[in-house]
Image (cartoon, rainbow, N blue to C red; front, side):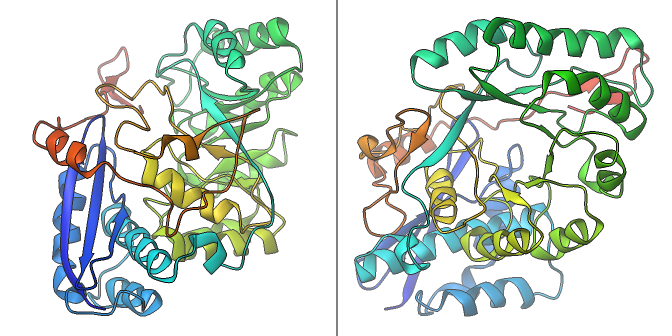
Length: 382
């Protein structure tokens, strides 16, 4: 079997699908994208084409190393996201060729169900209690929300109080019948992270995500010494080599590699194993589409330290497209009691509605995240 063709499809709301064809009539699907930089990742996917066309798709490890090491320059959001989607598609092909789901090829299940959570509240957190009530009717009991709006490097007590008041309202409304994580989203600089964490501690959130930006990872251990709240990060780390430094530095309780950004299944299985060696939990980042979610689930179901899985049903970014819009086997993604079962079809287990993908790709918008500014006109972290 040889690879014959790579085809990319940019889709609403902010996704990109990749189809890899072979001369055996077996095709695999992946999801290589950086939100807001889809065209850059698309160009990189096609730059890898000469390394892939004519090659045996079953040699996933070798092809991964060729893409990673063969071009001298390596790592980073764009290159690793391109590799990630290609890697997902290669695993999809292998599973289909062997008639087995990817998790079986990775050694088999370590659990029967995987806990998933839902986003609430949007970019500027509002109506969180209403959203939680609605989603609880669908069986969810675990949520994540943004913790703040714009926040200066050093900001006011009022801003801290506003953020904390929102969390206090949630605990008052639901008690401990629900759990929730709080995403600082890189909006909080180190000088404000400590007072915010201290003020939030009485409400016992499940975790705080990206307490500071990934490039400030030296603060993780320092912040962890001053709070009992588990700290989580990883969506803006792209290889085991970046995670290695974070594990060595300490401070994180949960790592959140993204299967569409951090080198795909091949790399994230290794990151998960490294995390387990440091007694760190795994909760893959996934505010993306169905192929990315499927890839995450296969890693979750073979990783003993996997504790939570993000998914994007109803997320505020989904304008013009929803998680299962391009999926024919929607029933396999059923969420019951806030959990999902393993995907059992061969490969990744996603039956893509290719006709719908092709049609939708003809009118796909170029998504961009908002550009925020502080009151003084300087750029704020979104």
